[in-house]
Amino acid sequence: MTKITLRAARINAGLTQIQVSKALGIAPATLSGWEKNSTKLSFLEAIKLAKLYHIQPDNIFFGKENEFIRSRKVGEN
Image (cartoon, rainbow, N blue to C red):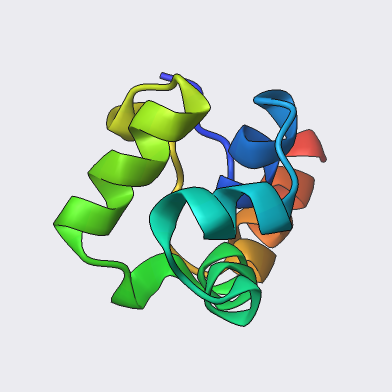
């Protein structure tokens, strides 16, 4: 199963951080923090984001974005 980051899911959905923040009633800084490190994201918040992004929660990488990027680079070698 292919996984993508929260940032990639948002961009693929054609949404800005401002649009998502307004839809969820959160501060843009909160969303930015989740995109960098989603380990503190609640299950309910994750489900809301997945629905908004039209993606299955299982296809979203939950963790530190830099770890995801690092693991992808290692897999390329």
